[in-house]
Image 1 (cartoon, rainbow, N blue to C red):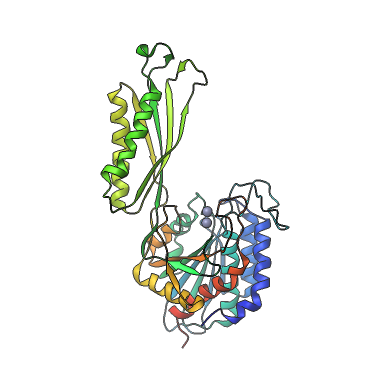
Image 2: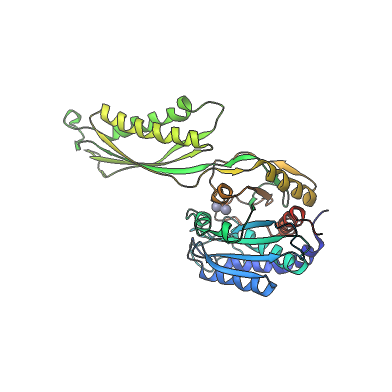
Length: 387
Ligand SMILES: [Zn+2]
Ligand SMILES: [Zn+2]
């Protein structure tokens, strides 16, 4: 079964919603227009229940199948927030809000889930319940966590949950997936190094924080190269090195280091945090300085469960002919919180030859819509076949 015919008919309408969302991007949880647009559409489609305010500004809609002898409930999730990026696409439907842009394709994800909702509410050709999950604040705000913490899974008795993200440079409408860890846990750290500032020509009278902080930066490189099992994956990047000195001849009293740690398992996450703290504080101490470490745990690793990955890949293959193996990605994805709470899977859909996500010239490819909508609908119809 290739693309569902209905989505060929709806392609233009769904493209219209996508471009409307693109023109009106909103950030994190501050999404009044987007949440209202989604709610209005879902009500118009005749969904059985439409509830806003889940996870602050998330929206959930329930669509019941013709029958419910299975008692099954399948959740489908799309994110809908934009990014603080100045758009450079030159599109006639480019962002009307300067400095805010749908540069990750969440406009496309939301339009596709709306399209699937319209189709499922029309046809109801399944035995069970479909729950449409529209999530704010994927880009660093943890909207997925807020929806889970709000009791969404229990309230609607969601048993499995599926999500999708577009992938530039992959053939448009093609699919790829992997079982197990897929996206990384994303932690961030700050290391405040304090020594003793002074004259640049009198190093013997100071404790030079720039030298101490440089040793810390190098020491941190040994976490991945010497502590993590070489067949595992991890990233430790120091991304910022700030001092308060703007002068050629002043050794600063303070250096602030910032960076990110990416890991795929709880054990390596714990190991990286423990080693980072120890290396920073002990290195500083060795030079007579101090290091204060602030370590913030962000999104956990996103882990696809085995059986549900198989279901998602089968549905994708039925739409597109096949489903490829996706590589590991050390980026983060807050769908991780939904997959911590329920079995399920996250799949990538090709966006064709476009700029990468988060680039000012990126644009979601509307040609992916029929395949994406078909996959979403197929997840419902194949997991809860009509009686
Ligand atoms: Zn993004
Ligand atoms: Zn994204």
